[in-house]
Length: 118
Image (cartoon, rainbow, N blue to C red; front, side, top):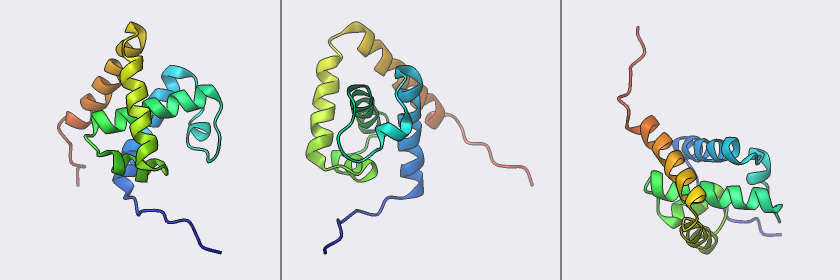
């Protein structure tokens, strides 16, 4: 039996995707472990995962392929999620939510890093 190929994903990418997943989970009520589950998702988890993939693409500047590797899906799935998110942004509440989440991520990653004291 052949094992499914999974591209190697670095810890930094996992942390960043985890941030997007947890921020979306907090704002939507979705469970992070459901958003990352394999197989068919319930509508709330599916919608939240699409938002998290879109945020990873936009806020981190990741390619669709990189988002796919981190989320364990193919590039076409990420592309569909991003198209869905762009269409959903026509609704003001969704656009406001995505803008807030993107600003939150940018605020965290654009802030100056502090070095631990010796």
